[in-house]
Each structure stands twice: as C-alpha cells, then as structure tokens.
Image 1 (cartoon, one colour):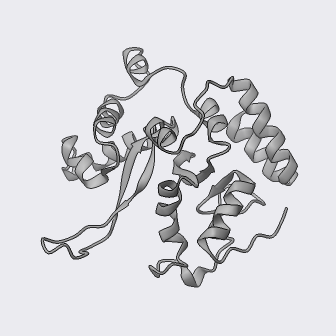
Image 2 (spheres, helix red, strand yellow):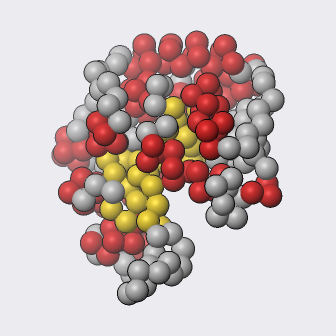
Length: 225
C-alpha cells in the first residue's frame, strides 16, 4: 500500500477520496489513519496545519462524512462511497418503524427527534434538551449518540466554539450533530436506494484494489463482504 504523507488540509481531502475510508486513529491493520499520515507536532496546535481542527472542516465542506460509524471509532468516509456504507451499516427502515419494532433504544429515538428538529445542534444543548444533563445520565446519552452514529442515522456536522457573554472564546469547542439525510441533501448526494449486496461487492472491489491482504480481511469482517 502507498506510503501517505499529508501536510495540508487539501492533501488530506485527496487521500480520503482515494481511500474512501480513513479512521482518525489506528483501526485497520496495515492501513493508514489520519494520525499516522500527518505530523504529530501539528496536532492540537489550533493552526491551519492541525489535523484535529480539520476533522470538523471535512463534513462542513462536504469532503467527507465524519462520525463514530464503526466499532465506536471516529472515521471519515468519502462522499463518493458514502451511499455504499449507508446501504450496509444503515437500515432500510425509518427510525419510527424501528422504534415500533423495538429495534432502537428510547434514548436514541428521543435524541434523533431532537437532532432532526434542530439540525446542527450543539452537543451541550442537545444533552440539556434531552433531559440528560445530570452526571449519572452522561453514559446513557453517549451510548445513544453512538447507537445513532453506528446506524448512520446521524453524523458530525462540525464543532461549535464555547463563548462567554462578550462573544469571546471560553473553553473547549463541542461537537454538533445533524441527521445523515440532512447532511447528504446539503451536499447534493444521490440518495437512490442501493442493494445491500451490491454495496458490499462494490466496497470489496474497491478495497481489494488498494489494500494488503491483512487490511482487506479486516474490511471483510467489518462490512461482511
């Protein structure tokens, strides 16, 4: 596999488009991650060269969908291949149908409704609106967000800076979320239904062309092709 070295945001976009799947940290054996192809000295600096800052730009620019879509780990999925990932990881049933069939947790259903009503909602606001601000409810809240990302019902919209009354930055930025359908429409993605088996074959051929046998085996296990 190619030895990728990325220095700029634009170069990172090209790598995501080429690979179609880029985790933030090591996830697939013998396969790149954003932290492995970028210089560690630039991380968390807040500069234009900081890959940690880029993660919020990718979804905002429509360069990649971002979220904890697999194994509860943060990954970037190329816009071009996203419909195939959704066909495999997502559900053909609406949230309402899955709720009626008992296939989703009540908390996930409630959070999804709030996100759909307030696309791009700040995590801090979402937690308050959901009545989960108390410390003992944080795990339930986090698990519901993971559930919704794992089923590709929601994705990260970007980050929102915390500011004080004077409008000055005050504290860490927080993640914002929107529904995957909303994100896809905003970035003019084709949402025509794709057969799940066809999607698996498409991804199998894609990764077989760029991966080592070890990495391909991991992808086969991940996506079931």
